[in-house]
Length: 241
Image 1 (cartoon, one colour):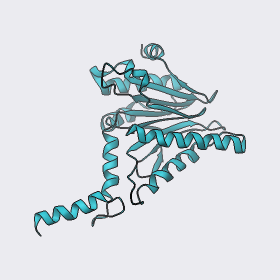
Image 2: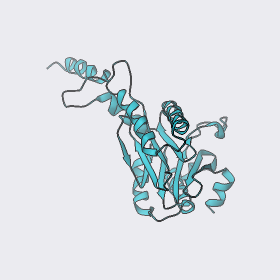
Image 3: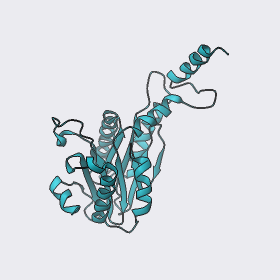
Image 4: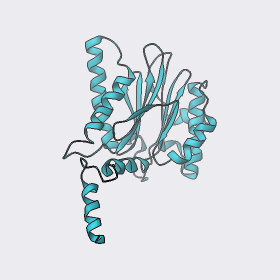
């Protein structure tokens, strides 16, 4: 076959989200996953008494105010999230999840469960993999929190609408480097405070000389008060001493 003809055929499958390639792949979905791997690193830890999320904000200019970069999100008092990939895509998902959580609270006078938030998020992601005129969400999200019964859960949502529950997880550019460190250092019986220290150490090991407290966000939800909490730079410095 003419090489130029082969290229044209490949570009057809490459450009359409609704068309499978001959080897059974949706190339636009695969490209969305590659976008996630280029995003800044985010780490999630399910600890014995709560959930910890640590995110690299990747401050690209000294002129940017670090506090203005939003990389961690509060979905409800008991649910936190962070993302890797196209953060504007993440904001759409977070806004939708916040509304869903508030609707549940008004309707049932109780806290929404974490899996319902994750499923709703992934339902929208999946729709965007089979509808012409749309593109996949170019973002993976870590969603974690504490259920009303005290159960601690951490999920990873993929750009194509799949989700998995994890004990510890990493998404973004540091995935291949950080995951072995998590396998080595993570302990299911560690406390939130221990998880914060361990997560910061792993992030520092990953970022090396580029690590500083301005570019890292840390949030947690403890099973005691089930309250989303974000640490200040001073609190981060004290934790890593």
